Image (cartoon, rainbow, N blue to C red; front, side, top):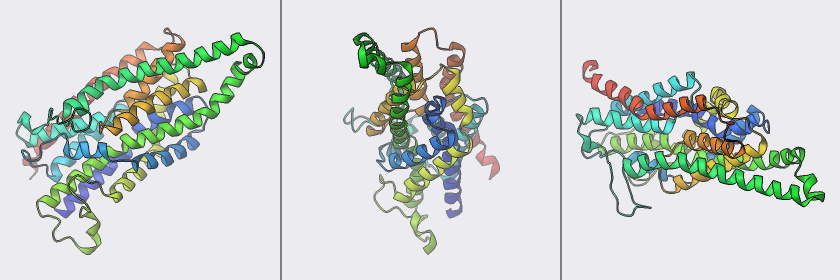
Length: 370
């Protein structure tokens, strides 16, 4: 059992690594595309701010570990979790290979739900659909934590991108009309200089927001594996060197070693292979300048921080992609490349069922492998 638990942790960290070059790339795409930072500088900034964000709370991790699957109705074994993670990893690699910024968050949720359904003999009640004590702080289940945010966060990202970009354009237009020093400062050269500096702050904000949401999802899977092993007595006779596996707090707590390990592995993944996604987000959808990158990052990060506060595992991909779309729309509604956007939307639609289907098949085949 201990071997299987370590295997779950290993596969979870592989998923976090893949998440690093898949989703963290989304968070730094704009600052690289606008040439404010080099890829290496952006990775360093993302790694540092991801770590701070990951340490800022565990609400999302708790949603993944205890808010989506009713563990009283289904036995979430290590094998089931490995299948869930593998389903998410396979789908992430498929979309990464094609350069499509699909959601690692939804791939993980889809994998977990598909694996749980198969383990529970397709009993739909193993999934917590909606459980509400207080809509804003105590709601649980797929409806409140996944479905509603999945629809609302892209819309919010798009609208906030339009709003912030529109406000910035209005301010610049007003400065132009004022004449004198204000008009000189509002020239494109100075605008690029000012927002090139400002984008350092917005990129840091985006990295923090990404860490506060995405880095926590794998933490939740590892915590779920440890909680399950602990509840079955599998951790009662741990060797001394493995004592760190025993939960320090209650069933809802996420140990610090889990937080630090996941944050580090995500940053490592970012350093290795995020540039395919950066190319799609930063260059193919709409041409970006520093002011556009600032508006998009600020919009997306605000959505992510708000969602993390309420324990909603929303997609960094959705929020930054739609924020970029909103910024592009504010500049010129005809500047968006709809063929690229269409491919991205299809990747979003397919992610949960595709990852869930892969995980469901793998769990269904487990009896044949024993």
